[in-house]
Each structure stands twice: as C-alpha cells, then as structure tokens.
Length: 212
Image (cartoon, rainbow, N blue to C red; front, side, top):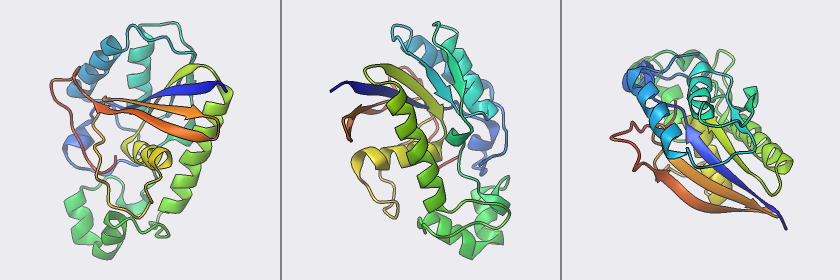
C-alpha cells in the first residue's frame, strides 16, 4: 500500500515567541533569528523533493514555507486549517500576564482541559484537535506515494505528534517543539509511523515552548 511521507516544520521564531507571548491567530512576522532559522532549514532540506508544500496562511508560517520553497519547484499551498489554536482573550499577552489576569482560564489551558473555550472567539482544545486531525488526514490522502512538507505552528505540531503516537490530549507534553526543527512522520494505510522528531543539527539553537 502506498504511503505518504510528511516533513513537519514549525515556523521560525518571532518576537512574540521570544517574549513568551500567546500568538494564536495574531499575524506576527518572523524576527531576525526566525529568518535565519528558515534559511537554515531550507538548506537542510535542499536535497529533498516535495510534491507540495502546505503551510498555515499566517505570515510566520508563510514566510518560513516560502524560504524553503525558494530552493525547489514544489507548489506552495496555503491552508487556513493549519493555523494555530485561537486563544481568544489570551492572545497578545505573555504567559505571566495570562496567569495574573486570568488564573482560572490559564490553569485550564496549561492542564490541557479539552472542553475549555477561551472567551473572545477562542477554540477549545477538542475543536482545535479535530481541525488539525481533519487537515492532516485530508492532506495525506491527497498525496499517496508522495513526500510533502507541512509548515505550521507549535500547537498544531503538538496535536500531530499526539495523532501519530496516540498520546492523549489531556496528557502533559513531554516532547519538544523547537522552531524550524525537522520532524518526519509517515501515513501507512490507516496508521501512522514516527520517523524523526525535533531534529535540530542544522540549527545553532532554537526556541521551544508549549505552543505559539
């Protein structure tokens, strides 16, 4: 049965990553370090051929994907379904501020309460996970027997890791989500295989956090 091999990449660093600020759907650009990270991963993937490069339509993911695409002819496909989780009223503030201003809400976020929906058009973890699950499966189904690249966000990568490994949404994250690291998964039949996670030999350093 043909498989789909997928390289997953989290966007390069932004100023808000460095400030520990919740980004969500806020459209924040890469900072200088993030641009350098995007160039580093483009060089690391220079010998890889992709049938398509999918990316979140937020500019931090778009810029990372375009930098990688500059090394190859693969089509770029923007997918709004690959956006980060919407954090509602928590977007734009630091984690410390969130804990001070909205202690109950932030505690529910940190403990992975799947039903908690942040006020202000936010998404519950359940709704977010369903969105990413559906997007990942749909993309994989379009590319049987091919290799593709997906550039998205920390929260998206968290969900994808759980899809592949079977780790529950409510379990504490014990795996890394570095900016611009290499992560390879494979869809085989109705199952998933983990190949590589958080490979960062191509980076001098990278920033890791719960989600962005």
